[in-house]
Image (cartoon, rainbow, N blue to C red; front, side, top):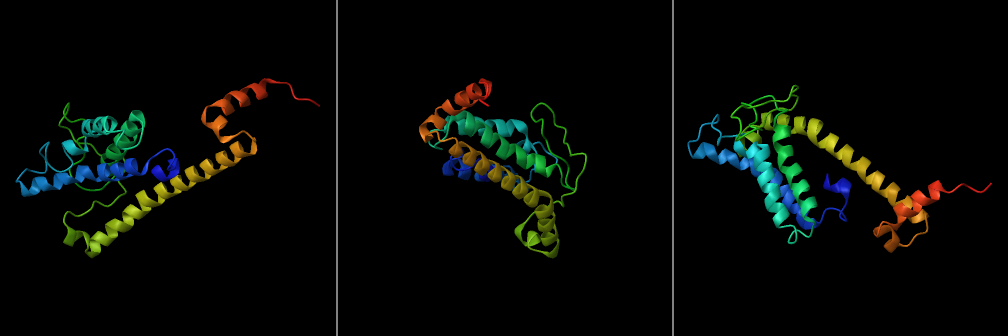
Length: 194
């Protein structure tokens, strides 16, 4: 997502915060070591995969927007999507007990209607096994390739838009202040000379 939006829109600090935030939900595997059952609201894929958890992380990110070198709204939405996407992608996996999207309002767990992604084994040694490699290939097919394709389209669009803006001959400052949009709408309204 950040690649498609570009570094002018997503600062490096916000990008790093988004990457970290996107993996934070899986820290819930520590619950196994603490004796918390998988099916508990504090177990694996429980509260940390909920939309409420994503909201809390996003609010914290918005409050830290200045240190992330970003606007509060941008930080909020970027981090909310980074964390919420983790649970949403997990809902497309073919194993586990589902995702507690609606915690704390419901203890129900949900899956997506289709589940093509292989569920990842828990533990580094299991992940580095033959089955782990099969899971990795599944993620490449269903997550990384589509995401990369979307990013390539977004980057192409950004470059096309930049070339279009440059070809108007307006100085950079005019484009940044929104003058370009006002100028374009006025010129579209004027009748063309034959």
